[in-house]
Amino acid sequence: MWWVGTHGGSGESTFATLLSGSLESHHTWPQSASPPPGGIPVVLTARTSFHGLDSSRSALTQWASGAVPGVELLGLALVSDAPGKLPKPLKDFAHLVEGGAPRTWRVPWIEQWRTDPPTAPDQRGMPTELRKLIKSVQALILKR
Image 1 (spheres, rainbow, N blue to C red):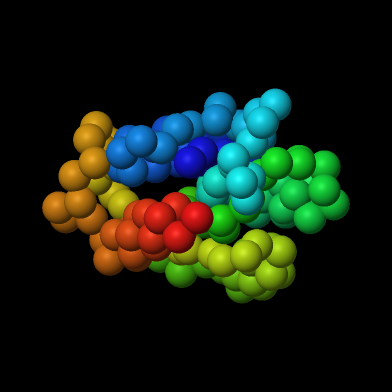
Image 2 (tube, rainbow, N blue to C red):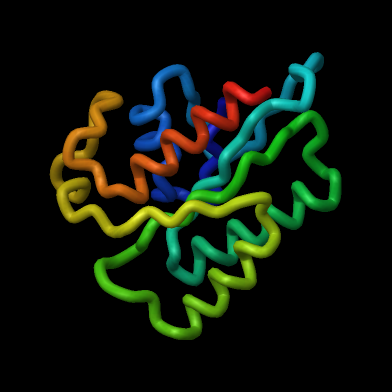
């Protein structure tokens, strides 16, 4: 399973750390000459800034157009770009972008990660939304 960051700083390497056996794609769609049945499982990651939402919209458009064959898009993980609520224009844009993904997970701002990012798949102290994301992705992979 691959985490595809739609822009730098989107969290793909952090998520790969949190879910054992998953990989970060370094901002490119994974490719395979012989993808597994159903395709290569992917979760897109993006911040909720304008740049992050716009880059995720672009990636979702690529996927929906068939430009990335052999990929099974599991969903989009939107990571808060700042503490607090999104301003209305970003909230509206996020809602629009989410419509292009099979499912979306929202990850809140995690202040601790600014100075102490996770280094192992340890879910202690993790926000509920993040635990739900990891468990949901695990369940989707097992269903394949």
